[in-house]
Amino acid sequence: MNAPLAYLQSRIATPPELAIVLGSGLGPFADEVENPLVIPYDEIPGWPRATAVGHAGKLIFGQVAGRQVAVMSGRAHLYEGHSIDKVVLGVRVLANLGARKFILTNAAGGIKLTYSRGALVLITDHINLQGTNPLIGPNDDSLGPRFPDMTFAYAPALRELALAQATKLMIPLHEGVYAALSGPSYETPAEIRYLRIVGADLVGMSTVPEAIALNHMGLQVLGISCVTNMAAGVTNERINHEEVLETGIEVRGRFMQLIKAVLPGL
Image (cartoon, rainbow, N blue to C red; front, side, top):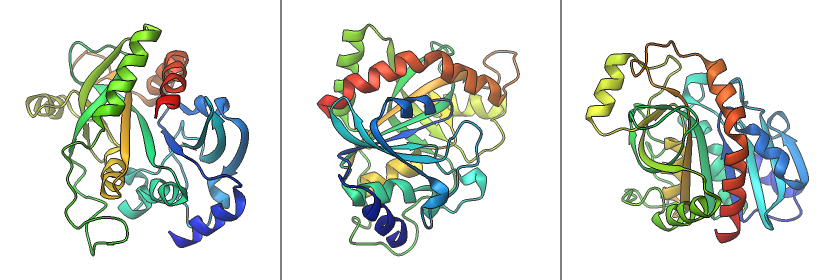
């Protein structure tokens, strides 16, 4: 973590207060950053490359809604072959740069039957089914405790703020539990039935490792999913990544409105 941290410290004039991680199809939010300093991931020593379609692979520093932010346009995933340490490297570095609160966004499959394609959902909790955890191995006491509490993995106060702003903007905003699997294959209908039984409302392939790493560091997380497709077996339609990206385009207006309304209160 030292090499990317030192490099970014040499590039930025003002450290970020907040950080936002953009999921598949939500990258256009990066264009909202004022006075941007754009740094491609390829230029940052040790930073994992973003190879997933819909992930731009760049880090943007600047201002949004009067707040100093860092925006990760694209993230690393386990299914790309990255180690779990690489998957959470970005958020750990941004936390060490100064970001104290994080908005983690993603594209997700809808399991809950009351959701529909394009729904925005606040993550209230998660189920980690990725088969790994960023805290496995010797604990770095400088980051956090050996056994961090995850009772409030997604900060209730930040969720209340987001719900209040969504109400003001008349943007429908649901709440739900997010299940993380490793991917890259989409889930089978049987797996979706299992996930529904164990309490999942959404399913995806990201976010949870970052949320664990940030809670370990004592930082607050707001998680927002965009339901880009209904999960396997919910409808009779096949799932494809093009649909994920198309839905991201369709909801970008509401998504941008919500994030810009939430930022001043964080």
